[in-house]
Length: 434
Ligand SMILES: [Zn+2]
Image (cartoon, rainbow, N blue to C red):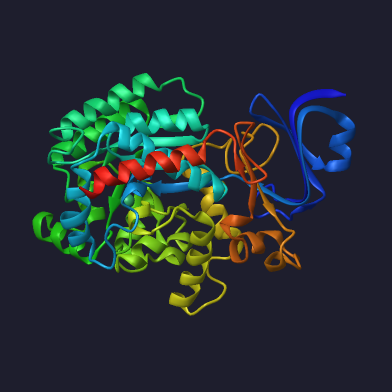
């Protein structure tokens, strides 16, 4: 018998969104990497695991990747709702953020990680301030992160200007370079909060370090009009004049992209991140996701920050994404359940240039979640992928494994002390309220 670190067995194993689920499936892992997948019977005969997660009513799925969030903004959850994006940002969020400290960012990230793990999320793409603290929390908690210091043309609580934020980006790239679960991205905030000079410098750093660029693009009609007024082009075409568009560019939101913009993004192989619930709640509109897919763009799903959603639940986000596209297009065949799941798993991994993520196959990272099928709202179960998108709730997530390490076992987090975290949070909230 071959020794392995971990054996996970379930009623079903979903190896990737487009393959049929395997009945009585199992996965073995060693050193954070999947050794083999197959039936539980075969793998139990072949391997001697240190730890076994036996889940006879479990649905094993690839760990979900939240492709856009601002984890520490969870501190402002429910602080201000039902307002237009610009008013919400300028009159409520920016003033609250002026009281941010590195300690608050660290605390907020841990809370966000706790919520994301509980939703079956194993990794996330984050843009915020004091991102070194976000990285520290991700390192401690054991999740995977693609993390970027937000770059703005004006002073933030973290830096007096954008160039300083970009210098910090380079410093973080050096500091976290060899970390197995953390990557640093370049994060100019938007085309209207960053000067051309900042965008050019972002572009230079990303090219030199072979890093991803994450940016909010074409989120609202206001942004569209503003960029057209100043630069005489849509945000997408304006960005093209800077030479920033490539397969390493993640354009977040893309609500107001027109057909010409979509063709440009397809030509440049730009990736799109769709945040349906945030766009709905802020009244920004609905991104044309079916058109993105039709034109061959890769699409990921993000929750956006918990201040504009107001949760970090990718399970509900997949459901919203698939149903919105069908409703808007008046066509139930648009954005199928496997496509919605791919946007949080295998397609998300492609966008991140990480072929070892998003699928449960030998050689891939052992990042997975197990859903509990022994629930009235999950039975009967004919098609597990359909259940993941249309039936499952975050409370159905029973176990989560990242890089072969169990971060949640039978709904108990193993790397976060939730009680003490919530206690610290209550004290911190008093500082924010002041
Ligand atoms: Zn955002």
